[in-house]
Image (cartoon, rainbow, N blue to C red; front, top):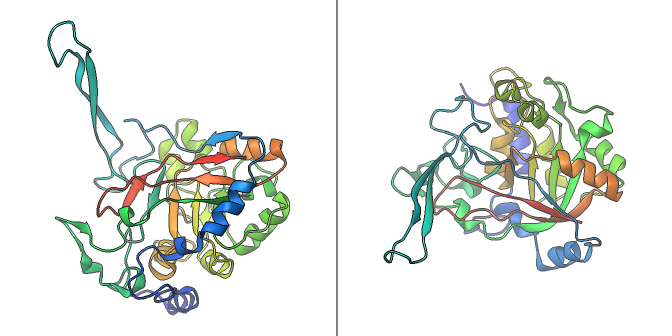
Length: 308
């Protein structure tokens, strides 16, 4: 089944292929300039730090929906072992096997493809089993530090959590800007809070994934118009699930990652951040969200920190 004309119309309007040159591999992260970072750092007032990552553990957010995307399997490979003889300093080491997108993570631009293409018009076949992503792997991303903006859609609506059938629209995002007395600007990393992660935190990881509020297929144009550098939210699927248009699966992924070249993140815990923004009276902050540079990977765990 081919993608509908509506999707291709939006794709044309948000397409960034060639905008930063034919060799570009990082897309909208080009918008995070030295000037943007200096301005973001200058906004630090109190030094308050808020962690946004979920703990990585065997009983994590994955419930088996995507084959192979396993929660972390943690193993101790040595415990208090005196490697250099009796009475010497003892060492303990760990190993872990996990899906790179299993917890709080960034999707690389190669995480999805459509019509045989990835970002900047490269062939989807450039992703191979033995090497991973030849272009735009997560290791190409580099440091991700910029001004973060929380668009707290749930708080704007006066609810703890949006209902499972709520597609977050551009109008919702604009209302959240007004609620937070903040204006999204070029190079920002936007965090969209739905409150959905509360379902997982309460112990229902199946209900966390489905049904889930999330971003509407109309939101990529809003982000494109504002030159947003990256977007993350507090859901498993990022976009509304089940999809708002029947049989149109993951259209927001395709528009953000493939057409726009915009990094996106999922399973970010924005609950403490929501409280902190209310207490601080501001919904912008310095955000550090450096990807783990797995060579050729199409995603990576991340431990983001918001600094006020």
